[in-house]
Image 1 (tube, helix red, strand yellow):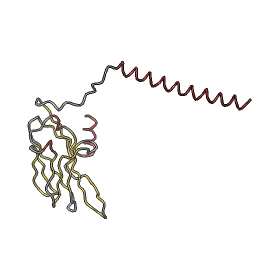
Image 2 (cartoon, rainbow, N blue to C red):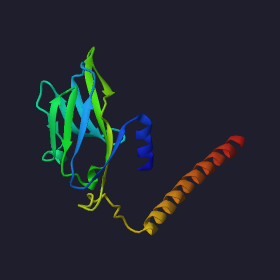
Image 3 (tube, rainbow, N blue to C red):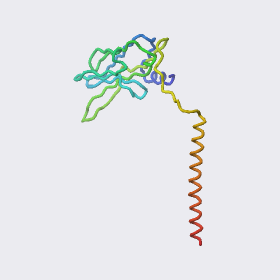
Length: 169
């Protein structure tokens, strides 16, 4: 998390700390020639939260359907996220796209933030947990694989020696 905060300060993005249950407004702004706005979440912009164009109905991520409101046009939008949970913590990116020569060009607009939700409240969704057997099983599988590889290597070596001996006779 500290690395993320340093990264955001270095790039000039805002860090917002807010308590569970509160709301935050993310203001996305860009040049006037942009056609599409995506609000994305994650260090690699892996999750689409919101999508807006001038010509289509906006698309809102199912997790935010009842908690997201917006006001404005593509190049200047206020996005309100309500009833924040600990799960909402993370970087949010205003990503603009414009089509140019049959190609979409993406750029980050102003307004990207690192949202840190703090305080008591609903716990974050449970993360997937490895429910495998004990570590003993992992060790056993590793030993069996190593033994099989060793047998194959020895077999190939013996065949090579037999071929060399037969060639000398």
